[in-house]
Length: 426
Image (cartoon, rainbow, N blue to C red; front, side, top):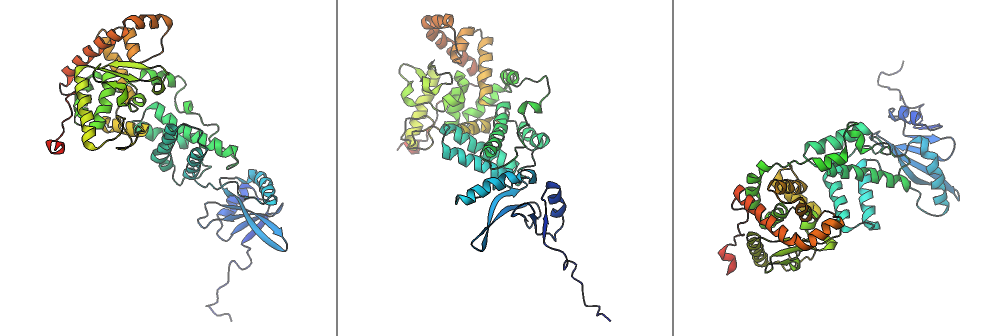
């Protein structure tokens, strides 16, 4: 009679390696069975070794040479599906024969793919430093954390909408910035597919305009929408005036002249003439490649003088108004400038909203349309240019003087010079 303590091994007659023609259906079936450690493809020396978490595995191509065998990783599952694995087997075999590394893909999650893409862009250095910093910032602040641990192949329209599009809109980000983050994902997946890091691009059919209704115009929404209202000015000017000197000056210059944030953050002292009372933005720093001159009102001159003195007391040794550091000759990154705006706006509006609101107020104050266009540095036709050549500088000076007087009625301390504690002057 058998002892009751004897237990039969339920797995004794079950192989931990299953030989078959590997397919996606077979993978899903055996992935659920903890007794199966790996699958062996009957067509070649290809194995799929499951990971401990049973969430995927590693494709391994075996090489037999001089009586020994060597395993070469050629990809990950589910990043590389079974229906595409034979393409990697062919590529991997060629690389092995040439003595090269066989692995074609190492991504299991979306954040891994995004990290690879950003690092690759920095190595290739095909873009400007500003754009590279923007890519890095978007990846770190949004895309990576929103898709951390998310399987690299499990992306679709609904997933992107739930994980990225809707959360960013709810947090108050602009349409253009949300689209920039979406484009980062699209570009990353496309690049990975081109260099065969992945064999399928699940983002290929996902388009940004598909997240909106058929009658929605993205370009029209960008032009039309303005989240900053005129009645918000008193509270906003007060908040700006109480901010740190560098943040305060950046936003004050934008709201006082309607300048673009990218052009403002690059401002240099050599382009500011406090005697002649004018600020020049050179062609290389403007969006349209044309220089623009802003007359400086008396109040703005006093604010700039006090800021210049504040920088000297703080030990700044640079010609920049907004340098990266006290000795850097490079301006703050665009992401930093945008973060300063968000600190004041609480994500309710952007620097571009300030620019659009300024133009609205100018028109309401009766300022000539062509003068408004000149202050905004918009492209102009030959007739406008002829008019500008003879009349514009005086017109701009009068326009800004009128505008700043109107802003004084909203918050009279908005151009108050920066106060420097007496203890720092001795």
